[in-house]
Amino acid sequence: MARTTTGTERHLLEYMLDRNRAGLVGTVRGLSEDDARRRLVASETTPIGLLKHAAVAERLWFQHVLGGLPESECDGGTTPGHASFVVGDNETLADVIAEFERAGERSRVIAADFDLDVIKTHPRIGDVSLRFIYLLLIEDFARHAGHGDILREQMSGA
Image (tube, rainbow, N blue to C red; front, side, top):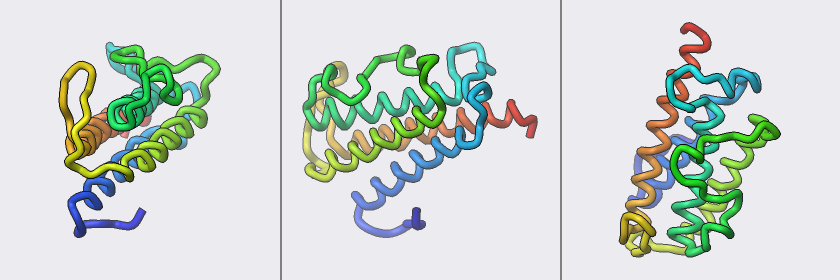
């Protein structure tokens, strides 16, 4: 991904979201299946679980809220809350990376049809704009990439 520091507001928002998507994936690349599932904190949080959760967020915000799909029709579902961190025993790290990347690509396609100021209704928080969705997920994915970095540090000792 080329470095971008100038351009339209939309270009910068899309770039920063893609940058944080890549950063989050970077926290799990190269981990073994066992390390990806290691719990190193009191919660259920694992490196692979952070990525699974992010895929759910992509689908919820872009497919359901922005695109208007019923939650039951969103690719892979939109499991809310802590359940969104749960990864099935049959899912590999490569599977979850691919799931997240597919969700991101679908989000890009859906968002391309809307202006930043379009207003959609989130079922629990009310009216939101595409601009808000971008900002929320930029923040969310950056935070989770930080969590992933800390988990990797705990594993490597560095």
